[in-house]
Image: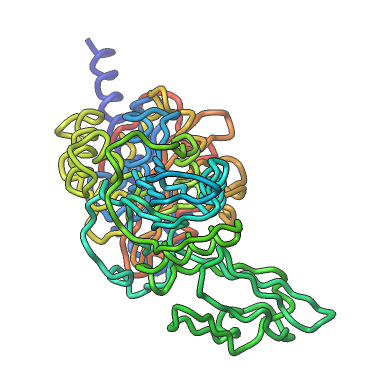
Amino acid sequence: MGLPWIRRVLAVFGATFCTVAAARLPPEVLAALERARVPPEALSVVVQEAGSSRTRLAWQAEQAQNPASLTKLWTTYAALDLLGPGWTWSTPVWLHGSVADGVLRGDLVIKGQGDPKLVPERLWLLLRRVQALGVREIQGDIVLDRSAFGVPEQAPGDFDGEPLRPYNVRADALLLAYRSVILSFTPDAARGVALVGVEPTLAGVAAPASVPLSGGPCADWRGELKAEFGDAQRVRLGGSFPLACGEKQWPLAYADPRRYDERLLTGLWRELGGRLAGTVRDGPAPATAPSFTLVSPPLAEVVREINKFSNNVMAQQLFLTLGLVRGTAGTPDAAREVLRRWLAERLGARAAEGAVLDNGSGLSRETRLSAQQLARLLQSAWASPVMPELLASLPVSGTDGTLLRSRAPAGRAHLKTGSLRDVAGVAGFVLSASGRRYVLVAVVNHANAAAARPALDALVQWAITEPLASGAPLDSQN
């Protein structure tokens, strides 16, 4: 009788020890938090072996947090699962009228259906196809049908007062070139100037051809340019550009988004040698079959761009597309319902309780997820047929995307990053030194969250050094 009793005592002692171990943050993480002046209570963590219930670390795992761009894991995994990695968007085009002698006597009509990759290069191809059908002059209008999405009106700077930030561009069924421009600066030391480029070409918008070069280090080069963007028809640069910076690019949301499509399509059509007698305006597409259809890159490629570079606008396009294709309408409410229902199916209704979704990108103060919910989501993805596509979409530590400058060991972690004012987080998979793969989720909600990035790097490093001891599973929650 003595031996079984001893075994039971040892089992209880062992389970208690494991619970304490799993609930204790690593010393290096605690030290980094202290340096950042962030209390441990502001951090939520789960580190769990992929494909297993064994949990090495669970710290405040059930606490609802604002996950910032970690929300994109929910949106992109759901999209890959519901639509398939090879799914594509279609943008139908009509030559609505007769064509003779290079003249379209009628309208060119383009109907948006949410394609997040209507970038200048693909719009150029669309217009080249119009010309291949014999059109050099459009006597009517270019008509844009953007009725597929129903998005509430909002000003570009409503979220954070930064209307010229490209991430604040509003979603649209026919979102052309993200309604943004890229200013490029290329030093020409022999002439003492930096050449200025503007892409894409916008009709009626002018910018200086060059700015003077200056000496000194490459520090606040944007500030040194003394740029003014208040006039939507003219970019003003009153300063200089440091030679030490080399080539630089400055992406900006266009100051007058309502006129962007008109200026872009007019500019591209003219560059191709085309003539337009009418205007660019909104209107309905015909009920007839289109003249041709522009097809997007596959969803797997779009998801890579969303997650690698945390593209908020593309994520919101995908979010609304789920409402349009898998729900009742291309509206935020319909999209939220699709994603809530999908999460409950993947995690179970009880495990999904408390999850709050706003716009699918994480550019929100309302979204809420716990570290445990994110970990369960990643465990579900690990076991799913679309795991390879989702994993390949995540930034790789020290290699690409938003982890290019990460201090975590290069190549060992595939992690989505999340950043907002008062929020910092990572979530994804890390590969340990012995070859075990771990799900890792860490989210900080605190005024000093940005300073806590070294603590997140320390946690990744800790996970890579093979923390999971052999023996009984660790599954505690704090």
